[in-house]
Length: 148
Image (tube, rainbow, N blue to C red; front, side, top):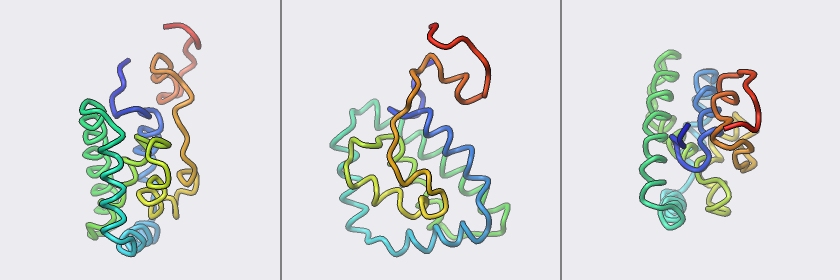
């Protein structure tokens, strides 16, 4: 399987599957926290993402961000929430997850609003499994580890 959503595809997929689990209150909290982050600080973080990724990685990361935004819109709509700041925060968060430790402290800037309701995101973790293990990791299968 190829890397679909950038350098940390597995973590991105895990994040995407949990967006729909957020409650209306959590959605509101994320949106409020995102609004409290300065646009200048976010712009600096985005610039670092650009500096630290290749064109191909950025393309895949933007695909992930688009999927995350759609998931955020669906989750918000299911709870009758319509604040665009929520999906913007999810967009930022998936960018941070995708590049992880390559952007240093900018990870915290991009992830903080969502990490407030998903604390496991507060620590940058690179994918632990290679891409050959991705189907088992995502789908919960019991495939053979260590084999291509």
